[in-house]
Length: 332
Ligand code: ADP
Ligand code: MG
Image (cartoon, rainbow, N blue to C red; front, side, top):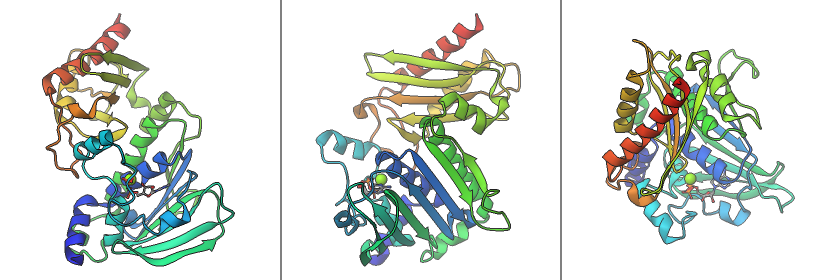
């Protein structure tokens, strides 16, 4: 049974960046305004996330790693979201099957933090009182220590570091105003030098894009803001104008606040830009789509973050039109 769980967990958490994504989403769900991720050896040796969210109650600390039991999803609507966005309520459980996991957390109405540790989906050490601020610190050590086949996959910690930085960068753009920090704790780098991603509390989305993606994004970013009523589709975001010179297309896509991939949409938007960009240029596109979960395809593998839409052509056309309209407006 242990082995089966471990294999299942390895499907959910395929590399450190997947774990970071899940942990970030939990911190955001907890209303955090400050999130710091610290890593060693590309997150494989250590991956720690500290937030100032509402914390986990001592009693809940005992069960957070039991699959599905802690899921926030209690309503029927949310159950649909489970099938569309894959698993829910099993990120911490999965991590505990493939790493050493411990949690320190404090809720606003308690005087101290509690620390607990977990192994294979179960509480290993009961919550013990300890000092700490309101919020949660999750420590993941020796990721995949018990999955030799996984260990072989990771050739370079710097590649994993880059993937983690990518995830944090994207969530920082989508959640501007929240302070995100990524620190690398290993090597000769002093603490302050090890910071590779940093955004400020209160920053705007445009400020974050400029600071995280640099000047090549273009002279100015164009706001996309459109609603497709028949599809109950809201399209929001910022895209580069015709002056941008990214080395390749940068496409940040959030659907219902989750970072996803959609290659069909990526291609369609690239095509829109061909009419505007001089040869060789590539666009920067950040889009946030809000849509009815019913319009998302349920038959996609949960751990691949690739999504498909029902009425795919219509949705893609709608997004294309929105971006084209934004580009046209700034062209004239
Ligand atoms: P899910 O997020 O789908 O419920 P997870 O395994 O990711 O499943 O998390 C389990 C539960 O642990 C969450 O529902 C939440 O109650 C709690 N939790 C996890 N991380 C945090 C956090 N950073 N702050 C507050 N609560 C958290
Ligand atoms: Mg979660």
